Length: 408
Image 1: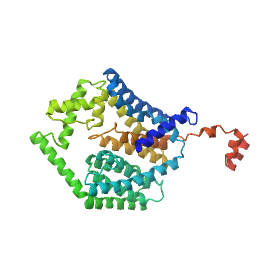
Image 2 (image 1 turned 180 degrees about the vertical axis):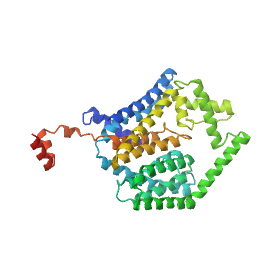
Image 3 (image 1 turned 90 degrees about the horizontal axis):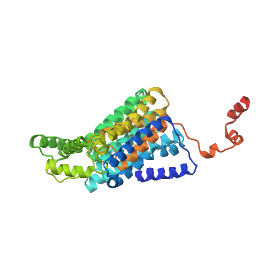
Image 4 (image 1 turned 120 degrees about the vertical axis):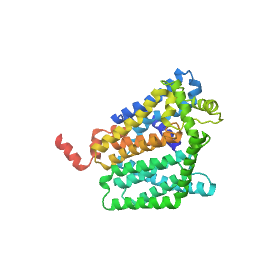
């Protein structure tokens, strides 16, 4: 649904801009971020051209359209008042946390599988819920939403859902992102806010002890046994062993084509062939369980550098806003960027960074909203620009009208 909504909305935005009902909102931070995003898309296209594999790679290049939609979506989303958009983000994150817990409980106890929501992948599910959890905490601490208790309850619900997903790397991402949000809002951690945060942390500890101890201890035991099997017996047929094998295959493939890569459609063939030749295993994946290694193999150094530039540019803009601005809405937008950068980079160390329709769409949503709230300017509607001067003056507050008449 998130892919359908974002990409479908972007297509509608293209129509609106093409018909003159909207116009591009060319904020400077957006220009820099768009340049980095488009450079990543271009690197993947160049890799296919260099390898003469455009026909093979075409189905894998189509999802890059989600990234190309970034400036278009920004131009139409930025007509919204910042306060309204911030509240929509916070409240929808709260709903997402409660919905995630409901799905996680059903899948854990009724179906008997790791929680994966509607994503079909526990890591993707946990990554998105992690973002929702931290946004709820950020929204409560920033003062955007006055009713804070439901946000803390939602954060707790989302945390339980993440535990049920069994995604160990996202547990780490949640911890790091949560600490970052507390540090960003440390000046507000006084009085009742400090008490609420302490109660939330205590509740999380109780929940982990009550509901998550078995899941966490089980996943940790699996990790330990996998490492032992790999280290002592050279057994790659485990969760950890397969990841290590994928990294070895990916590094070898990168060394073969370091500058331009093998093309975005070559990963499955390289992985299957690598497992067969290097490990005598019949196993297949479509990525290397490391976001930057996948980019290195598919688009070479150019692809990995441009992918890193997306996160560097976004984080740099957020850092400037947090350093210089005190407006709560703008700081909340910058916090969104910090959170998505931390979560994606952490989860991408052993999983997918980009290249999954849900993760790509959610990344664009956070970059669009976070950049606009942090440092964007609200775009006027074309109807407002078309109003005659007399009507514009009539729509202004009486005090502003008097000031304009005095200046005239």
